[in-house]
Length: 278
Image (cartoon, rainbow, N blue to C red; front, side):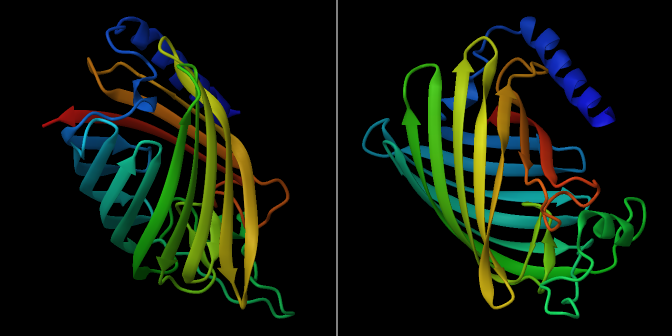
């Protein structure tokens, strides 16, 4: 109840403030990003992220390349990442290289009767790692990711995008993933994401979101599909280029899935972002 009330308050504040700052469309972030150097500041409740990136046009405005570095510090972990991408019309190819330190790592022992994981359901994770207690484990590892993404702008009100990625992580076996709210071993992790945004310049965008993960668990891969929605709008705390983004995913009945601080198999994240031109 408190979480729902907080989300409603945030969107109510966004609506009230943004009415006073109507100089920029509220769905600007769903259009193609302009060329140039930018500094991106993200705040997401338990931490923040700082990104410096350059986007340059290649053979006209329809093609561009982006390079950048990002540094993040949060309640459970910190990491640094270098990234690059090339977009040609509706196709984007890119990759990341990074290093992560998880100071509140949660890794589990295998089950005694052949189960993949022992006592790693949501309630047990919360019991083992209380919010105000010390983390039971630490981990440090490098990671690399390659992705391909397709964009389909149907018209000025509807945008669809689909992305496939392969990510290599050297994490401990049966570790909880704070980014994707699941449990897996080290190795290659597959991911597919599909998003549809219904958008309007006066209020932003909202639409369904489907995420499929292909996770190394034991000696096999297991498929995990979550459903939910994304919503984005301008908050209007600064004159231009800020946004409020909410993502919500759920997997009913999955004991491995979900943010460990809750007793429900959900992943919810609220982000405030400011982009500054350099």
